[in-house]
Amino acid sequence: MTYNLWAQRHPQAARELEDMLAVVQTDESSNDSNEAQVQQQQRFQAAQAGALLWRNNVGATPAKCQNCNAKQRPVRYGLCNDSPAINSRIKSADLVGLRPVIITSEMVGKTIGQFVSVESKKQNWKFTGKGREAGQAAWAALILSKGGFATISNKELEL
Image 1 (spheres, rainbow, N blue to C red):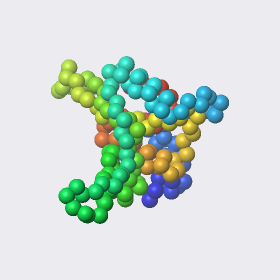
Image 2 (cartoon, helix red, strand yellow):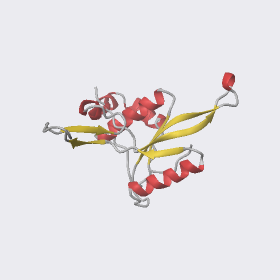
Image 3 (tube, helix red, strand yellow):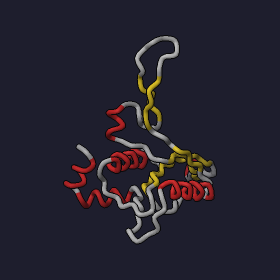
Image 4 (cartoon, rainbow, N blue to C red):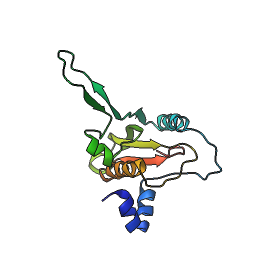
């Protein structure tokens, strides 16, 4: 089942999932900053909060065997892009990294690095849950389910 089908069957749950994923969006009257500008601002804010974020480019490119005349085969890159089938269902975020977290109880005083995933959107973006956004929501849900931090956002980060 795709995210869109699930969201149609369970609209309240879909809204709750958006809240859980920290989907942040502005209204259409807002400034029209492009995604790259929003992303750079988010990286700056993450650094101010002590987090590290790196660009996660995802795709595939042909590569030719250096020592033979073999047919070109694609080299896949980016997180969660092991195959076209996987990439059609789940889309990893633009930015990935770590944020420091101080653990309580038996690990009192120790700092661990929590996985961080940020899908940056241009300033006037509105969440639809369609197309790529369905795969991006699936990725964010996966990260959250494993204890990481994930957001789909066109606003400043609160890490």
